[in-house]
Length: 96
Image 1: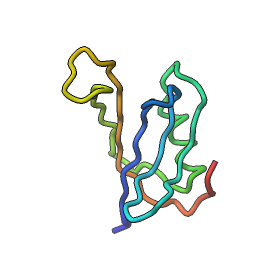
Image 2: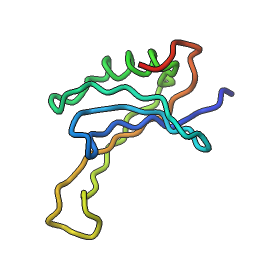
Image 3: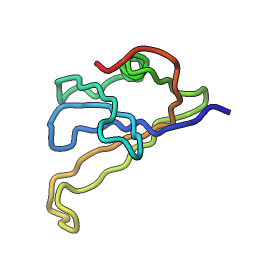
Image 4: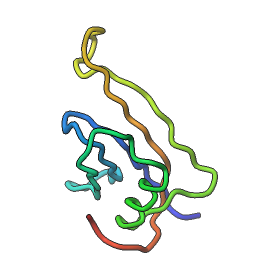
């Protein structure tokens, strides 16, 4: 079975949507930034970005969404969205 990783999609403090692959023990993670805050990147856009980074979403894997506050423990703080999905190396390209 191929090694799997987690890809995350967020706007975070950047303000624009970006996707990155979590690589524990590494100082830099592969990422793609769409440079926009709206609309949310489509599934097809996410798959193309991940493919350009050399990863793919295995069949049956789904994006799971959660929200968190910008300032922890402050219910009045701005809400941020984070999505995550399992990915595996596809043998494709490099960073974009």
